[in-house]
Image 1: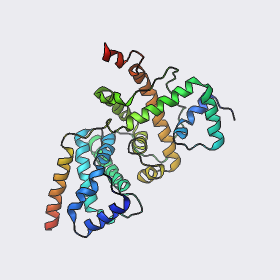
Image 2: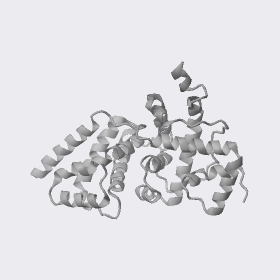
Image 3: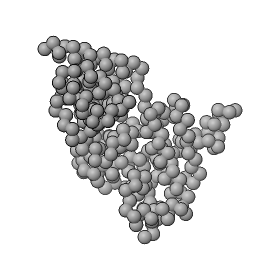
Image 4: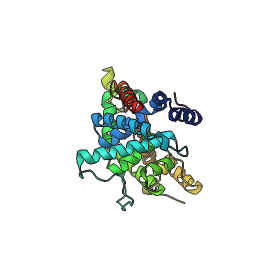
Amino acid sequence: MKATPQEEAALIQRILAGESELFHDLIRPYEKLVYVTILTIVRNEAEAEDGAQETMINAFRHLKTFRGDAKFSTWLVTIAMNEARKRLRRVKAASEEPLEELTEEKEGDFTPAVLTDWREIPLEALERKELRKRLREAVEMLPGKYRVVFVLRDIEGLNQEETRAVLGINVTLVKVRLHRARMMLQKHLVPYLKSEAPGRGGFFRRWFQ
Amino acid sequence: MKLDCKHVWEHISGYLDQQLDPALLEAVERHLETCEVCSAILDSTRNILVLTADDRTYELPVGYSERLHAKLKAVMATENQE
């Protein structure tokens, strides 16, 4: 269960005063947040797990530098992002496109996948491994600078201001990149999802045959 | 304000995040009421966001949490001795 900011602040005080073992409780709600943040950048599960461990160790060692003006979760995500970047540099040298350019070139308009017979994919469909894999792959194929914004905003649920602060880019860039990321995902996923939608001869028919 | 489809696409994110100013919002909504294509694009985008944000889409590796806390415990033990 997530602690309130006040409970968290009290916990941090006690850890800094010497009750180190309480750090386990402090980070428990954020284990997945840290892992997924790193995974979506390094795109390798073993690297993401190592990176998550390093992130938590770093957070423990530098806890006294945490100031209550940001949320603890945002602070953790910032450390996780740095850890992920470090790993990315090591694994891929310079082959990866940058995660945060400070400017946005004017690119052509995005044309979404156009359709008139869209049907919603029910959440139960996520029980299927194949669908989860498709979604993760679609996020992975986004160019780095769009992917980081999408992950922080739409997967981790950070708000615009927190995302801006973590990435060190301005709010307009956050908005533009989030929009482009979403449109790219729409274009990429809709043709696949359409064949999965109930009533269109997708997986429901296969299910009940 | 009258919008064509292309303009509406530019504002899909703003619409989903409820960041459009009132005049633009009204124009987008008016367009959506009559345009099947744009409504489908909006719905599909929203659906994709719900699916990717679902807790099940990303899973932690088996034993991840145990390994993480064991590692932390080891680090704390050495650092407390110093």
